[in-house]
Length: 277
Image (cartoon, rainbow, N blue to C red):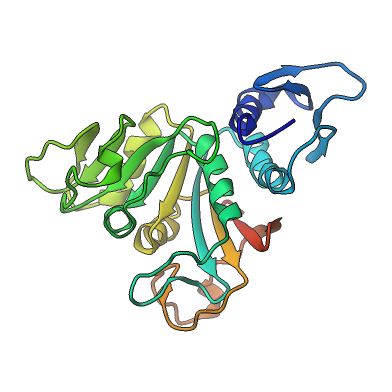
């Protein structure tokens, strides 16, 4: 059976063995092996995913979205945001609990489990005080990467109260000691690009850019992302905070139009934009 206790192991097994080609796997708990059996538990063949083993509908959908990303790329930088149908991530007063369904949280934790780092802007930490872990599944949590130009953060936030690693990127000269955190300083000029270059030099293969709107928009406009995912709730909010803050354009010829896939995730949909296309 594939469940929350072994889904991370399965995804990471595929991540490590994708170069073998078509995979035929037997799965027993957390024990995953390549097999020559005529009816393996899981088959990856010609972009098809065949399950011959019990798996919940939502975990199947998570696999169907994430596995193609793993098998088609040696590494990737992927942006992700949850929003309403009319492109809002929160009300004007900041309330965002909850626009998306609980299934989207499970999916997000699966995506985090195959990423080496998860990157957010300082406002996401201040407003949401997130953990940025894989606690909904039994997977390894990524290194937390925080863009904090003015070095506003302090040890009061949740991410500094566990033993998981953090890296803060700043252009401030403030002297601070923050728990379980490496502080990396860059000048204001080319700040985001310097962060990107820094990450490229690390051992990180897959990086998830999880928010907020300003950070995601900067990475999109600088063409640093390989993929951008929107988890879209069938909800209309009206006024509220937009999911992106891209610079205005004056001609639709300049709109971003790329290849995409649309996947079902419970009551919601996930639209994945291929920004390499």
